[in-house]
Amino acid sequence: MSNFITSNCATLSGSIKVPGDKSISHRSIILGSISHGITKVSGFLEGEDSLATLNAFKSMGVKIERNGSNVVINGVGMHGLKAATSPLNLGNSGTSMRLMSGLLSAQSFDSELCGDESLSKRPMGRVIEPLRQMGADISGVDSKPPLSIKGGNQLSAIEYTLPVASAQIKSCVLLAGLYSEGKTTVIENGVSRDHTERMLRGFGYDVDSSHNTISIQGGGSLQACEIEVPSDISSAAFFMVAACISENSNIVLKAVNINSTRTGVIDILKLMGGKIELTNERLQAGELIADIKVYSSRLKGIQIPKNLVPIAIDEFPVLFIAASCAQGETVLTGAKELRVKESDRIQVMADGLTSLGIENEVLEDGIKIKGGQFKEQTSLIKSHHDHRISMAFAIASVRSKFNIEIEGVDNVKTSFPNFVELANSIGMSIKEVA
Ligand code: S3P
Image (tube, rainbow, N blue to C red; front, side, top):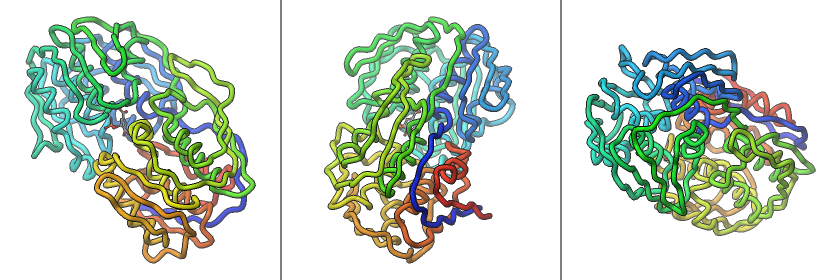
């Protein structure tokens, strides 16, 4: 197990490109594998999560070659996957498990899906429920992993209203819908990321979406295509906050995906007074990207608008660091989902902030944070092996006069393998020690 030890730094500057988007990387492997022809992916995220998806499809007989972030997938078509010879281990990756459950429920063979300690605690009832309605034979242990899926069932289309705004549940149902008889419709009760819908269209599959309703007709096929994965806004978010809370700083984050279902972090930071400019906006493989300039800012506490919660869902750990450095109080509600991410991100962040002397109050579905000054830590910050908690507290070092030590940072590799290198290249001071 390794730890981060961070020291304070002066100013941040430079122009950097964070790695490829995790959500898009997963989907490129899934859809590339079941398409006809050769899909070439560039900018693929070489993180453990997306590699778990890649290896799972290799185990199901798909020929996939990878050279760094360039991946070539030899699609086997809708019905060409084969049973893996052992359970598919998806590590820490909830996205792999939830999306693949949908796809594998519709195959002719049985599958077993398992993961690490954190993934084994995450709720899967949210995908089991709609898949059973479609006719799938899927079960977990108390609705948690490992999941067993019996193949050989012809699924039927359903109309499903999502109980929570979740792209993972939506995508799971849509992937099962590709194989179902009839038209599958998902109704969202809040905006969630739309990469599955966009990428399905990129592979030539018709997707009807209007307002909050997305429909696909089962029984079609996908044609291979080229995918250039843009930089992940969820990774860029760490440095957006770092630049906002540091003195005399300005940085540029290049070619970041600014899909409007992902930009809540920019909206929230701007509401807090963050100086952020988007330049050079352009389209890349069906996704909008831009270079993001971020300057030192005087942040103020805000009540976070509820509609921004699902489109900033992964960025709250680092937004809590921004709130800790803002003047006044920041209040987040309507974010219960944070409690079932890789860790209980409300409680784990609250504990770490308390250890750094930041006043906060935990709410059932959010948190209140009073901006203040980081004091010398009273206990080691426990990341609970959650990548985004580790990186968020590393960003706090920009404003702390004292070293900060964060325990159990190994999982940063799941989403952002070169985090330390990039952070240090813009002037931060983070050491990873075994
Ligand atoms: C993801 C969707 C989100 C997000 C996760 C990736 C995806 O989860 O938190 O990191 O790629 O579909 P939910 O859909 O459960 O909110």
